[in-house]
Image (cartoon, rainbow, N blue to C red; front, side, top):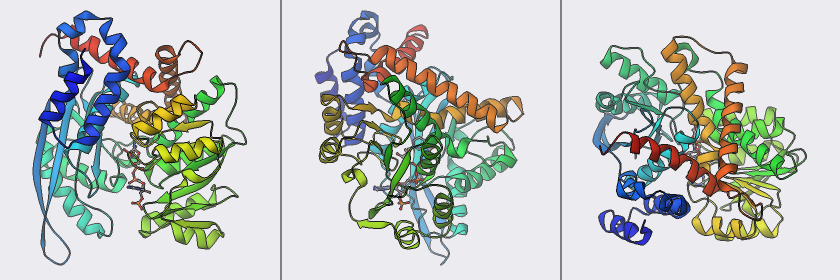
Length: 444
Ligand code: NAP
């Protein structure tokens, strides 16, 4: 495989799609050896076929706001690769959403879903709609308008969207309602549903829980544990609260959460009633960071990121490229031992290079946060069987899946000196599964 040539051709075809090109480059660099060891992959142009989505659906989403004004947003669904199962991946509603971001997320999703051991292909979608500051009625009208177009392209055996930034249980509920009305079917077409209409126990917290199960195994493999460790977390959304809850349960102390305008440092630890309070704030107001600082006497540090704190573990839980080279340098100087991305592509390539160079444990998003989509896969299974598993049953399966992902990363990522390159391990394991499926199914 000639990576340089392939990247040049992609850059020429998709200029300015930086996040997408970044994600593709990372995967190609880490699978190069294993790819070249299989000349049949090159002959079948597996890399060239894998880096382009099967199709991209774009549509306009007109809706009416509370003042009676018409608003028009853009909607997307990227159906990236379905070699091992129906397209599967979240919907992101955020003003920054564009093709590059959704293509990077969809591309990552192919390998993440392959790692889960479940039969799910990769996809992603969303809109530049900003749910922040919108009334409940506006969010409902937007979700209904979005689904009025999307419904014809998705289905329980075709493409199964879920949540992501800006899309939680409320948005999934509104979209599911419109799908059900248009398709006249109650099916597992979306995951992250409420329990009353086919949702799975543990799904809301699964990404954060799974992340901590993975980090726990990373530490144990290195001969240490989560007990007594301090953790910096960024963001406080769907993912971060599950991560904070499980980290505390496993004996660690979470000392930060953040928003786009700064972070709070709570040296007593963010747990129990403090997490409940944050969840309340999240449901009722836009700004959760400073009211928390006031109520619990924690420090609010505006316009900064929590990676300047002296902690043992850093868990990015907000958005892509939120931890850069400078942040990695500070973390290393402050003695960090592990960085686990629970957000997708949370670290920049330069930050990752530095972490690997210093042999810091680094878990890539596609492995660490795979518990979310894995539990979505379990929700699909329950929907197909028309039954629900108990919380301990789902949690045990999630635990098992995260453990298998860890095993695959170690198998393909262990280097000669014993250091485990989890990024390489995750990319190679995910890639091999998809590539073998593509080979077996011919040129299509
Ligand atoms: P979310 O509920 O919308 O939360 C995102 C959090 O990050 C919020 O606290 C948000 O703050 C903050 N944030 C967003 N953009 C930011 C920025 N540019 N700078 C600093 N903070 C920012 O989203 P989520 O579902 O937790 O997703 C977080 C990350 O996890 C994303 O990378 C997502 O792709 C990944 N992920 C999610 C799932 C899942 O199950 N939801 C699964 C796998 C991976 P404000 O609310 O104040 O803007």
